[in-house]
Image (cartoon, rainbow, N blue to C red; front, top):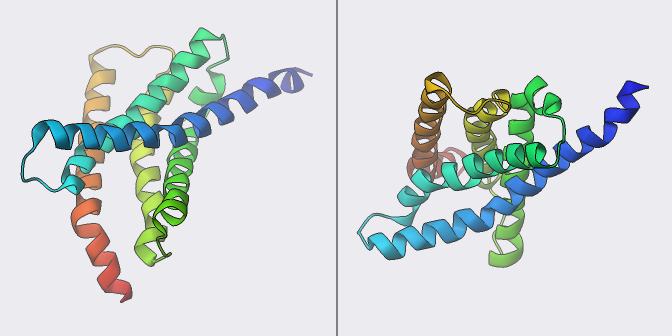
Length: 175
């Protein structure tokens, strides 16, 4: 009986994770354009994206999901009981939506690197959003912020590597 009653909370959790992570692409894209126009340095946009996207497309949506849950009294039990699963779902939904937009908007073709990219987003989401979802009821303290900082720096390193060398290595491996 209790399981049926909690079903809307579970559905709301899945929906909020998928919607906010997929929607964060707009924030990520415009964030990169903003930084490139403000900085106006000779740094390739892929490097700037590697530093900004983990924050705009993983940290911001994860905090938004937790805030919405708290604001509308949706139980945090689902997020906290499977934080890395929900982070993975968010990252995969972001990656698949991004790939779909590349196909529809830019006419991109599907290549091995194109297929692997959602996995990189999922890994970065597990690193950053997993820490946030795990600690959803108490997003404070030195330990939490230290873990979040470490996860964010690692996610940035992974994203910069992927945007610069990873894509090239995958292309050469399957060429």
